[in-house]
Image (cartoon, rainbow, N blue to C red; front, side, top):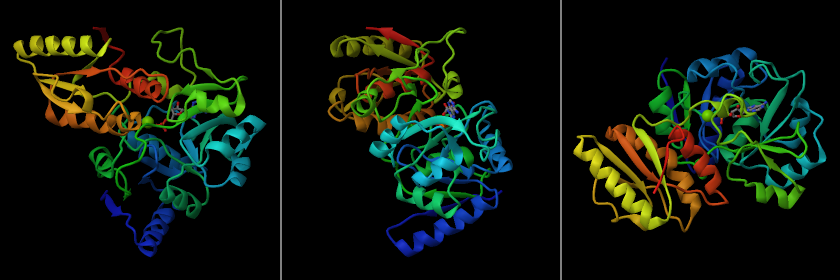
Length: 350
Ligand code: AMP
Ligand code: MG
């Protein structure tokens, strides 16, 4: 299959035509990759079981890993979800459109192919204007996981999508680099208090300000057979770079010293070494290939560059990557969640 890449530009009329053609493909049951504010999504008509099946096939995604259904208006929520609690409406009023996914009991309209066999459905209203137009034009319901091959870092540019899916899908909409760079926060409303199944840009503190108590899935960050995360996708090793990734925790000085000594040892063994640091530590590492992930002054910059840097290191073909850690209470929680998965939970205390 030939994959076409269409660039979205500032020309409103041209964009309209591109999005209309993309929406027609979705209505016909085909797949279209498109930008959202979090990461690029691989979209299909969420109400068409055949179309959803194509997503699993193109990504190589395990069939028990449900898809998030993207909507463009509050009215449409009632068509796919049952028993929408007032707290969910309050969060929607505050954070939609935006990087928040909520889980509800599903209606008859949603096929089990879309929900990975579950009786619940995950729903999000993205804020990216092109995503919203595409959803509206395509009939209102687009199932879209991240547009990467399963197990690879999520795509934050159209180029990343092409790296993984070229030849497997008919169309990629190129809206430039995304704004946030990590996937949405997921909250489950079939529990009380509501349960965060995946941390993201919208933090528990931000939600608590609106609806009071919110809890974290106790299985998050644990790796054991009896602690199963409630979001099926969270149990898979994700975002994995080809090289071994090792996170180093501790005070900034100790982390730098530890990474320098680990890098020296690995180089002595003839290994290719990568180092992930920040603008603050540029120049602090003597060995290996250094990449700055962003600045600690602005955590958003770290989230935005995370997946791109992991992909960059795949191209540089290093054998091991040592990274600083980012476990602050705010956005750092979501960043660390993704990094721990990429590292297969390999953490060293400095
Ligand atoms: P992705 O779209 O690739 O970011 O993956 C979607 C995430 O949402 C996966 O971790 C899924 O397991 C999770 N998810 C989607 N639907 C549900 C659901 N009904 N219940 C629990 N988790 C869900
Ligand atoms: Mg994904």
